[in-house]
Image (cartoon, rainbow, N blue to C red; front, side, top):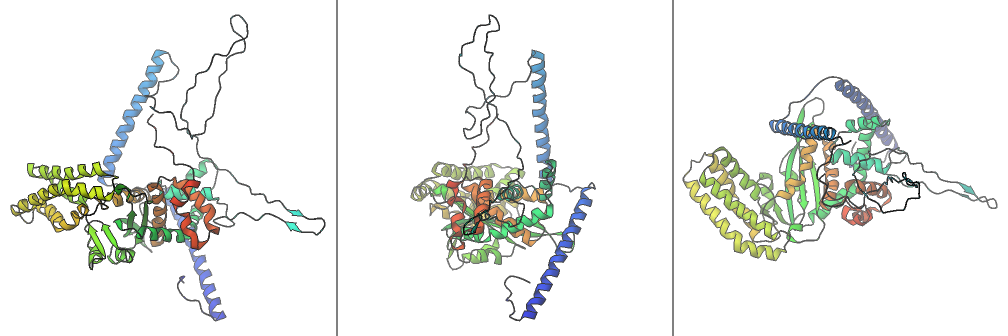
Length: 516
C-alpha cells in the first residue's frame, strides 16, 4: 500500500487494509531480525572484497607515509632520550595562535610562597604561557527533562510545562544524537554497524536496526525541506549537473545492480554572486535519460554538464542551453598524451592550460568583466585549439585514440566555447564533480545501498550536508538545530530552515586544520 493510493470509504475495506499493513510490518520486523542475525554471523567470519587497483595503490602510499612518519617519530624519541630530556620536541610550531573559539582549560603551575634558599616571601614576576592542542573524545550524556507539576489550593487548577517537541516522539534519541548519526553516515561515511561498535566501547548500546529506523524517520521529516532545497536550486539561471553510479542491493538475492545519484549544483560565487550556493541530489534505479529530463522539467537557462546523451532532449527547443566541460575535453587528450606523448599533444595541452590560467585571474569578478576578458584573451586561444584539432584530425586514422579525443571536443565545440559569450558560465563542470566526491567516499565504505529507498535517503542527506559545506556551515550544528525545530515548524515557511537562513544561529565553522 502506497501513500498515493486513495483510501476506500467502506469501513470493512479500511479494516482489511489495516490488517494487511500490520502483516507487512510484522514481516519487515522478522526480516530485520533475520538480517541482524546474518550480519552477526558474517562478521564472525573472515571475508573480504578485492579493491580496485587505484585503491590498492593509494593504500600502499598511505602505508608508506605512515611508516615514514612513524619512523621519524621513533627517531625523535630516541634523540630525546639520548639528550637526556623527558620528551621529544614537536615539529615546527604553528605560525598563528590556536583558534580563539576553542575551550581553554588552564593548568596553573605555581611557585612556592617562600624562597627555598632563604625562606623569605616570593614576589610575583609575571608568567610564561604555552598552549597545546588537545582532543577530547565525544562523550554520550543523558538529558533528563523534568517537568514540575503544580496545583492551585484554591481553585485546584493544575499546571505543568509541556514537553518540548522532539523530532522522534517517545524515542531515546536526542536531536544531537540523530545529527551525529546522520553526519557520521553521510559526511564521514561510517556505516551504522561501525557506529554501533564505537558506542559499545563507551558502554552504550545503539542497535543498528534502531539507528536505521531513525535515519529513515529523519529523512522523511526533512522531506519538505529537501523539496524546498530542490526548488531553490532549480530557480537558478545556470546549473552544474553530473551523475555517478551507486551499487544497490537487488531484492531477493545477494547480487547488486547499478543505481545512479544525480547532482545539481547552484553556485555562482565564481562570477561574483553573493546568493547562497546549494546542491540537490536525486536517486534513480538506472541511468535512463527520462530521469534528468524529469528533474529539469521546470528549469530554464544554462546547463553545464558532460556529453551524456540523456541530456540531449533537454537542449531541443532552446529552453535549456548546453555548456560543456573543458575538464572532460582535456582529460581525453591527456590520456592519449600519457600513453603516447608527442610534441603535438603537448602543444595542445599547453594551449588548454592557457585557458585555465586566464580563468584563474578573473575568478570572483563580475560577469561583464569575465566576458570581456574571455573575448579578448580566450577566444584567440580557442581559435588556435580548433585549428590544431581540425588540421590534426585530417592526418589521422579515424580509429586512432587521438582522433576520438579530438572528435569529442569538435562535436561539442559550440557548447565548449559558450562560456566566452556569458560571464556567468564556467570553463568546466568541476563544481558538480566536487559535489560527487562524498558519494565516491561513501561508496568505498558502504559497498552498496540496501535498496532504492536507501538511495533516496542518501540523496536527501547528501543535499543538505553538501549545501552546508558550500556555505561554510558545520553540518553537525545545522542538523542538530534543524531536528530541534523542524517538527513544529510551519510547512508553508519551511524554506526558513534552509542552511544559509539559520547560519547566524549556529556556531561558526571551525577554521581549517592547523599544521602541527
